[in-house]
Amino acid sequence: MSEEPSQEDLAERKMRFLFALRSKGVTDARTLSAMEEIDRGRFVRGLFADRAYEDMPLPIACGQTISQPSVVGLMTQALQAGPRDTVLEIGTGSGYQAAILSQLARRVYTVDRHRRLVREAEAVFTVLALPNIVAIAGDGSRGLPDQAPFDRIIVTAAAEDPPGPLLAQLKIGGIMVLPVGQSDTVQSLIRVRRLETGFDYEELRPVRFVPLVEGMASD
Ligand code: SAH
Image (cartoon, rainbow, N blue to C red; front, side):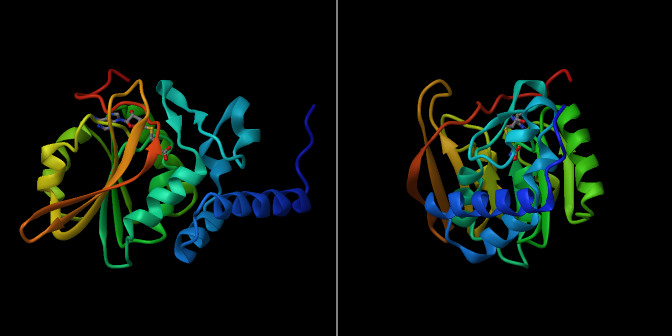
């Protein structure tokens, strides 16, 4: 039988968690305090809950994964979301990334093709009282035309190229962060800025994400 971790263990785990983030290059103060505030343990269930504070991706329902915390941190800081921004996230998954962004932006729309993941993430947002997140079941490769344009867009599943509808739904001056590349190889995390005259692309680092799949899932 496992014992409940004491307050001291939790505080120590949290300190180690934040230390690991810093050592992997997550240095932005707003990102770090959002990640200190939002408990990753709430988004991981069952067998793996014990490993929520380790810097590794973990399995969630529907054969998907919650990203590695340092990658969540690096993507969040690259996005540079401010308190007046409206953010679109494609790939709700567990809801962890959306919850972090809810601390930094005015409003977060998050879309997943698995209805079950959207439902479960919404339940966690309610428990944590995060009313500025709107979770929607849909095919995120089309974006969210009804709410567009967005100040910031983050995609947490890999497409071969930035999807055209998402580029079109980014405001001028806006930033999109996403992994691109074939799904079974190493992909590149890129940052796209929309300028008056076109788009500026910047390669940030190698990453590995589940693929962006078109259309709704059956569950
Ligand atoms: N951001 C998540 C991790 C995402 S895993 C977290 O913090 O836990 C990638 C997610 O992208 C999966 O849940 C998968 O269902 C979703 N996904 C893949 N293709 C999609 C699409 N076309 N539209 C919406 N979601 C998609």
